[in-house]
Image (tube, rainbow, N blue to C red; front, side, top):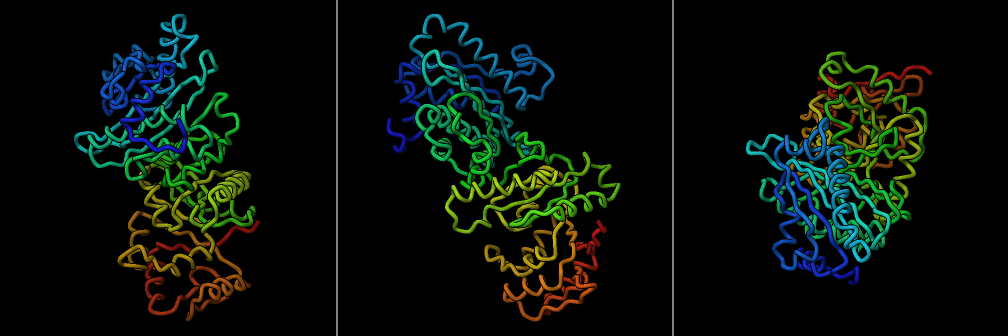
Length: 441
């Protein structure tokens, strides 16, 4: 089947059912049995489905897959994958192994509950062979469900599962080809993919970090996380209930000073904030929008190079689609109720006020309001006066004034043109903007 052909979900499921060499099992918890249902209803299911199971009851799930893990977690998914694969081969390898490319599809999903109070997300896993008797390959993905209703989320999971099984057999030519196939008929309005783990010979030529960055650059996720320890996890697990310090910027040149901004801001977090959270977490922030019209592969390579340089400073990196701070903070606030602190140089602050916010009806005022209504504070570090002047001139700003202190301009010594200066003084006076005094090194 030609990889470039596009097919609807019905055709994909039927194509797999009619392939006598592909055979496997399905184990789904949460959001119904929507993936298996596609194969059962399109016809010829006996050609693909060895077994389908849904262990909704917690005691049944513990009996099958063991205790001690959360039910919607990577650990539970891995236990499901190992169990189902062992059963599949134990029961069928002797009779069908010579001619069959086996697979085991598993998922554990938290779809929207009746009250609409839960985090709608899940883990999906697939273990598969590319040739009979071949070494197995694993793909584990974390999804965020974006649809507003349980029924819509179930439908999206069903389409995604069919896409995934189809893609590993017909669209593994490159990471880009695979992601396009697995997201077909979906998109960010339905499902967000923010973490992928791979193992096995099918992915020997794939660069894992570039695949991770492509999730954002290709429009499959709002943001992905590159933790300092290089163990890739979804942003939700990294940010959950932390008091977060974010350092945004382009970082064309990475310097130890950038780490100092995070370190000092973390050290100055109020004790009550730390007590009410799981502690402080510092992260650099990059945006794929900053790449302009750069070709996707070049953008992904650039992002990965920046990530690697920033991680050398001892902190992880969040890579966002958006460049606006209010969108970054809105994303982070999905996973923590603690205050979000931005640690930034004065040049980033100037960018906030120079942005026209054309995508918002209320333009600048709405952009500022959206940023600070999310329990956000800006810790702004000084900049050399010469650099401030360059930034203001290059941005075409007029009427801006500032006072120097030993050649440096501090946040409270900056005066945008009126009447913007009145808004800026208000933010300073109410400590939404906090002028920072760097420690001497």
